[in-house]
Length: 371
Image 1: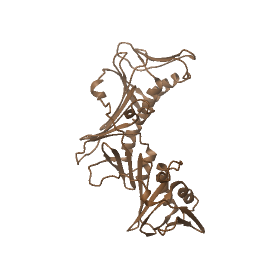
Image 2: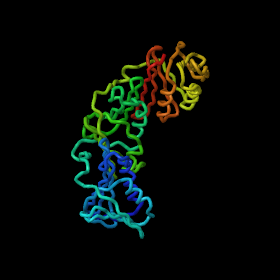
Image 3: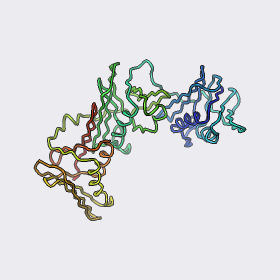
């Protein structure tokens, strides 16, 4: 096999696959990139860590000979980074134990793994149903839910993932750690009538960014009970699903509180930031007292003292007091990309609900009270 392209294009491909197989000393097959060169001048780079599988495509190669080679990701990327912006060539005769990487007057010999040892990797099914979601929309769905998953596997493992549900007219993401639940739903076209659900560990923007043009491209989303497949113009990402039933419930339908207030996001963050002045030691309690005077924050700690602050907001209801974990509310306010958010309340022992709404879009966050 042989391919010739520019160093910057090759680096983009290897940056993507090395993020999946960084070379941490676990197994050689999980630290290598499978490079497949095809006619007419297309190279495909693939890697997996058994949880994720990633493909990146390069077309319009300067020169090529069809074939397959399996090379260590970290050293391959390190060598490419040393190249200038000129042409760079990877070649292997299919027999020797070393592949050759050359640029300028430099030649690098890299050991070749057995192609037959490359792990089997699932792919996006071209004949299966899928929905097209703009890249920025998909990223915003994950950013509004990733933070609310359970932080470890010691509890219910399925809660360490985000539930992705494609419905007849919308796509919904839900996350919960048992104390709070974040749910976000966006209208999308679904001409194929796909209805499917999967649960996957949080997906970050940096992982899917390489396979799209951020400003214009959409991602084809294909969830199933076994995996979530994402396909962009430049490649694919497949993430293995977490098996288990997810406690998805309709926050908007069940928690229809009539006591609500809309607050500028910046002002609310400044108020909650006062509660974070105290160190997280000892027993802590954060109370928000809502009255015609506005909202008064009272943060007390058994070891570190207390903090008080207030904010003027319109409050046409009887006075109430809510008790929350301010850190958990701050995370949701920051995730909501809006100038203002709406908070709604029931009784003191019921959750506080944050709401962000837009055209064809709804973000809800329910936070249990903390006493």
